[in-house]
Length: 180
Figure (cartoon, rainbow, N blue to C red):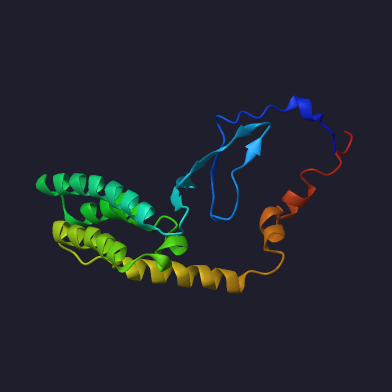
C-alpha cells in the first residue's frame, strides 16, 4: 500500500452534499467550510429522503411511467398487436416500476401503492390483456431474491469467477510448448 500525503487531495466543499438521517448530528465542517445539507438524494436510481419515506421515489417513478404510458397509447392508436404492446410495456414501463422494488415497495404508503397500481391498470386497459399487479411483481421479486440467497454457497463468487474447462484442449492450451 502506498502512503499518499494529504496535500495531494483537495476537497471541494462546493461539490459535497450531505443527507442527515439523524437530526441530533451537527453540520459537517471540512477545512473551515460547512458542507451543504440536503433533504434527499438519488442513489443508484432510487430517491432517498432524510425522513425514510418513499413518496419522493414513488412520485419520480410515477412520472417516468406516465411518460411511457403516453407512448404505449400512441402505439395502440397505430393498431399494433397486443403482443408488441405487451413487450413494450414490459420493457419500458414495468422495468421502471420494478426497479429496486424489493428495497422500497415494502415501506410504501397505501396511497403510493395505489398510484403505482393505477399505472398498471391503465396499461391493462390500453393493451387489453391481463398484466401482473404491482404487488404480484413485488412478491415475485422478493421470492426470487430469497431463493437465490438460500441456494448460495459461501464460496459462490469463487466458483463463478474461476474459469473451468472440461475439455483436454482447454487444459493444455496454455501449457508448455514442445520444441519442433
